[in-house]
Image (cartoon, rainbow, N blue to C red):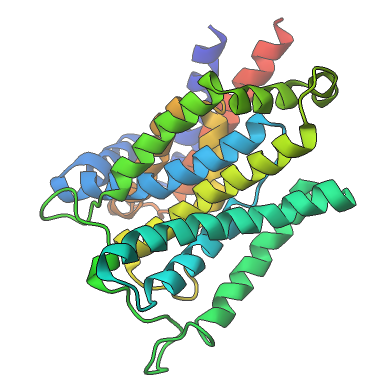
Length: 327
């Protein structure tokens, strides 16, 4: 009953926003559905947008599950892209280019998250602050890289050279841009679920998240678990950046990200930090992103999509709050 009330309230709030913009809520909903699922290209674009959101959402969810408020997925995504384009443009045997680029991307994200872990464990810096600030550092790092060490050979634009074809992900759906990274993201969502539910490390992560002192009393190393959680979380976001390089853009530019790392926080929270539910919520936010352009045909700015995302998250938080009070 509380859930229905929250959903109804959220829909009313959204309708009010759209009406305030002098547009029809039904027309906006129809345009959004058309833009996200109305054709082969729009559906492929939805799945394409889902891929980085799913991976970064998994990374954020994993950290939050361990009570580590890693909000630096955006920076880890960017470092993953930097490492991937650097590794992918090296003179390596063709069969190695793609796996090396993807692995380098995951490594880049893990190292960037590792900085926050080191600051927390060695200097007591709260990860909320360090990961947030590292996002801004990463943005500036990308800007410098594409104008310096990684700039294209002709030195014309602030972007890197393109990845060679052997370093690119194959297309999954002929005639569209959907690539194999989507399947990889789905597999990793299942792996993340199995890790949390079936392994000793996953149990330790959940135990530390439930109560670090109790976990330590039970013999679990909180520091080791914290390190591992940060590294895994960063690796997933870094891999998302690498997949965008190897499957979508094929080069690094400034600016690069569309804010996937920030949207990932909403994706993870809406999924209640469940890896499998993250597939659903990433698809939801992917559809919103893909349908944003079509929404303009209904007479409103695509910015209304951001309002829809905020209202959705607000609805979930309101439901969680009411549920907690009802205990």
